[in-house]
Amino acid sequence: MSISTKEEFMQAFELDKEIAKIVEHLEFLRHKLNSPSGASISLGSGVQKSRNIYANTDLLADIIDLEEELTLAKNRLHKIEEEIRAAIRPTPSMLRITMTWRYIIRRPWKQIAHEMEVSEMQLMRHHRAALKLLS
Image 1 (cartoon, rainbow, N blue to C red):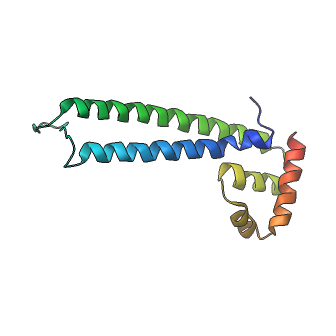
Image 2: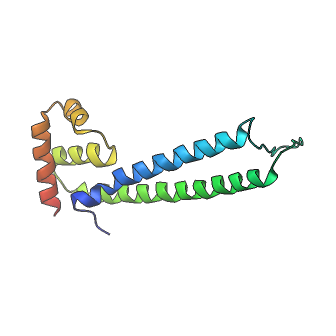
Image 3: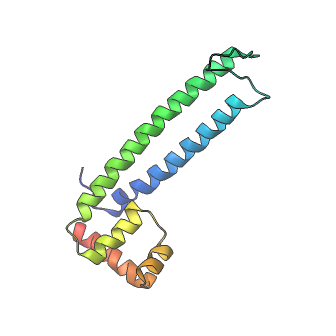
């Protein structure tokens, strides 16, 4: 797949959101598993009583599934970032920097303009020029 349109570049943002949701859900499940009020299980050598071992098993299975989903999402994101890098490599340096800050580092336009010491309007011109070159 070759990345050349804004919609394709935006896939990185969507995957970032998906990854954040998975991480948040994992944190919730881990907290629930380790919560003193909830069921608990010891994976060490000590024996820990549990009110509901099946609830723990279900939580552990959910955590494992989500960790696998997280790994897959991170791998997809890495692949998209590599495709973006390859797509923007031949563009002039100012356009390549603009696209890198936006789609690989994923910074807001205002921050990019500040870091590059250009106006947001000028930054938008760079962005449009890069997209035009890539299409």
